[in-house]
Image (cartoon, rainbow, N blue to C red; front, side, top):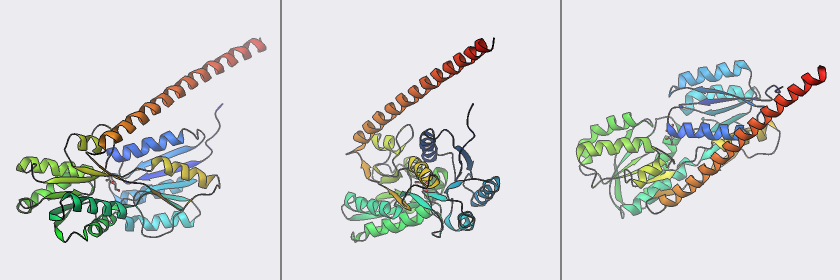
Length: 326
Ligand code: FRU
């Protein structure tokens, strides 16, 4: 007979449907499989801060042992997270932040550094001269704010480079396309588009295709996901020029959660590494990924085999019991 779940972990996701966040959840589940007695409650706020506040409230009322949250926007989600934290429920923040330090641990890459890295890369890619359009994420979400600040810092020493327009694509491809189409005039003298994620970068590419401007204008994104539709593939097939790796932190969020629950030592700030990926290292990244995912498949196959063995064993025990009783 199975034991009751030891811990109930709630995960509040700001939006669950895109590839980056589906990858995050996969990573979490993989790590959770090492803790078969724990239970995960998952809610997807589908880009609405209001809905996310409501969902967190509901999960708190249900009674949970720990909250993992990626807040859609920092300010609207801060009070409910503080409320949970002050009630003594450990909170692990992942990727996007809240506006206070009332949380137990943070897991994610440094978005300011990523923006800065992008700025420095773009500065040398343009050889210190040119006009840029920046397509930013959702206003009020911490990675959009930090990436923008970091990007302008990274460009600081390139006096011949100008950011001629900044637009909000809200992290979404259709919004990025719609907003960019309002800048047809500026696009005629633009040399590069920096989008805060690869989804918006791919939207920019489609606009450039429509306008026949793909030859001259370079595109840079962020995320660099492996697999179908991910940034690595986009770099490899020259849809975009480069992308900054933005690890999801799914595995690290779960392992941090269990350290907290198990009263082991842990770090409050868990900053994940990033790097620039372009045509010079994309093959290497893809190779690494293929190796990793084939190992992952082996593990899954072994797990299935193990489960089959276990149920066979249970069956035999059952038959044995019947024989003994008889
Ligand atoms: C996915 C996403 C990523 C981006 C991150 C920022 O929902 O938009 O593309 O890097 O969120 O929080």
